[in-house]
Image (cartoon, rainbow, N blue to C red; front, side, top):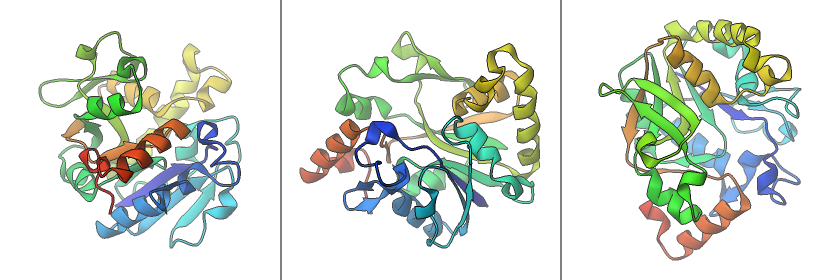
Length: 258
């Protein structure tokens, strides 16, 4: 298993913390998000780790992993960053694709890695309590996620008009079997011919758009339901909420930090 951590963006919503460092090096309760994630990966025996940097990528080396750089990080998004990983996507190994602005317990990774299926995304079924701690109106921010009874993913990343369209929230963690890895780049390139992704929109594609395309192409893509154990740090407001919860011992309701 090879892990690819997507860490190219600046994370302007976390400024001023990101004025002098990449988003993944912002600290949560005294330790950077990247170091927390690396510890979980290595505890699971994953030591083949590639980080795709961009903004302040000079700060990423030195943690026993490979760093590649998305030179166009200012004008592109996560999917383009993924395909900057190049040789790491040769199909020789299964891959774990991970956002860099997340923190998760070992049990989350264990559940994802043990889930059957060629392509599996981690789904937080206890997302609503976390969103309520972060914001007044969870529905204004949460995205749709709909699965069939057998767990097959049907819809992801759309604007939800009601909670019935949200069976959980995508956790920014994807497992792809080795036999499916090389086909990912072909699908990404083919999407450039779609009107929605013409020109600059192709490079600015969201990962959920790419996952939805896999669903539309009837790929065997599944969600594995996981009850909490995860945080995303998207803004200074998130960081303040988490630090406040940690100070009162309540953060463990959502994620136990090692």
